[in-house]
Length: 181
Image 1 (tube, one colour):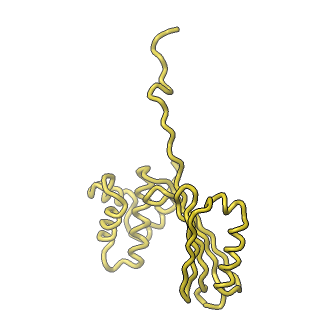
Image 2 (tube, helix red, strand yellow):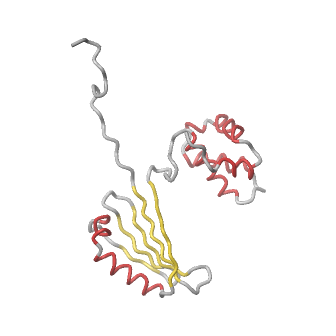
Image 3 (spheres, helix red, strand yellow):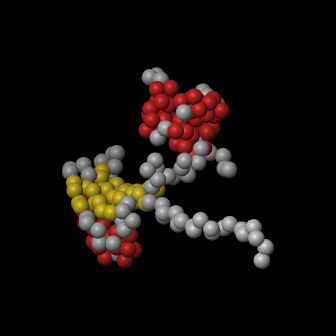
């Protein structure tokens, strides 16, 4: 099993070894709790004075879930995966979103992912969002919004995808017969 790169920073920042975190998880029965319940207990354990408490709560919780095999790196608590990309551009938000829509409407690869699903575009003076569903039911979201400085516009695309459903093998598949032929 590969070593989780989160462990070193978790140990340094929390002042607690990974073995001590595992003992804590055992003491609360974390293997039988869902993500939210584990995170709540870790949040309480870190205490009020802990800087970036929410972020470190998630780091410890996700590292634990990966440690016990509940999820793999990049997997969300609901079993889906998410990928995203972002770029900065000098285009105005509206122009940027119009260009995305024009591209998406005519691009075969985008259309293969979304398969003609219902499309919703909504916006405010701070953000314009294009949303739809992929053919597997996962969300596809493209957002145009100002960067932190407000001088450039940011484009980001996020696609949450569901892993393929495991195929069931017949009960006899893979078993060796004990009778000689």
